[in-house]
Image 1 (cartoon, helix red, strand yellow):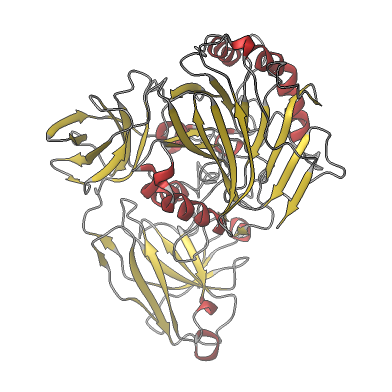
Image 2: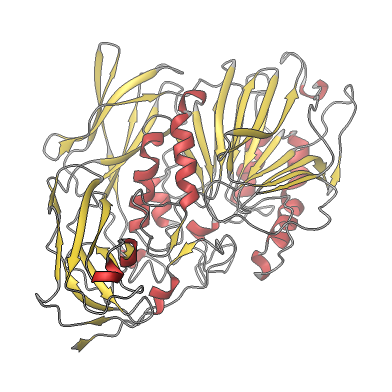
Length: 587
């Protein structure tokens, strides 16, 4: 037997670590062994030339002596990858085949995403702590490794008549988007970017979690009509085209109404039930299933940080983008950066903790440009309908005098409240949060929320922010209108009261069992169930709902009202429909 030892590092991930999530952390400290892979074990796949993305493959085996409940099957890409130095794409335990333990034979089904390279399955004995590879399948290929995939629509800041389309492919050959508005056809050439292994800050992103991301393309489509559909294809003449999709342009700034979903902390889970290389979030599929079923309700989506939870394992970005594709190819999919995209020790970040697995925000930035097209900045604002939304980065310096603070102050203080009477701020880490956890030092929720209040709360009050949307804590929380930790609800004729802070971080990752007892005085409601926020606004009324997935019920809601938008901002009257005493709901 040939023994090869893998020196793999376990990263100490911080808050949002998803305690209790399906995790394969043992594999990160495993000392891999490559056994004598011979024909004594019959290990095969039912097809090895795939045509379509997400094609299903059945892997089967027989002749496995002394079968064990620790045996497992993993998918690797490329097929030639050194398994002692490369994380698998995903894996399943062999005992999920009902015949394995009794006969040493069995089969499992896997759904395979086109990741621009070939694949192979490997059968391991010895569990995840001391895995020994004993069999390897034939190489599995796709008909077209250059298939354009996983498109995303997003806002631009140039005109309400445009959107941006982003997608990936193996390489670059004059990428473009072909699109149609009615009977008129247009094309838009794309710009192309990528990132390299040596640009990662550290492991696992720079080592065993690495895989080539391919080329990432961005094209701006002009001449569109706000609130109207359009048809489009993306790709190139030489490398092939996607099928035709229908997207929707968001309402123009100042339009009479807009609706959108808002949520955070999603992650990914494979359709076949396989485990990801580090974290698997089964509830994330409930999120995407719910959103797919209810796309007609919304004009866009806002994902407030902790996007894929790839944390250095690059294949998880492909898995996540494939999972949200039915959503992001239909409606603009806006994002905010979270700690699991950016933070890494010694990387000159705001928080010196290893939460991104060495990514330091680069894979995120290359895939999710801001509306002005920047692949570097992670803060921006957008307007749609009667709502102005500022998206900040809680992972970059926001203190007074910083570049981001100046942007936030300038943006908030120059909103046209006649055109967009509603003002929302969104970011990952919350300014107000109910939590009993007080660990992780300077990156703890209590410390960070206090820092945010010290640096930004006066500005929020001066600008008369209506709602603040946050993630990070895996729960739903609603505050009263609040300032300086105190409720500030005024009478109907007393004008602006203060922002309502909403934590909507319950969209996939393991829920946070950290409710404090008793809860803070400003907390109006906390719900520890998976769900998403939904905002629907007209010029005079804003409705918010928190929708729980399992029951598909609205489990919390409130409304804000303003008088005629022609009145001065200082004369606005807000009427709060549903501010009950503090309630906590636990699943």
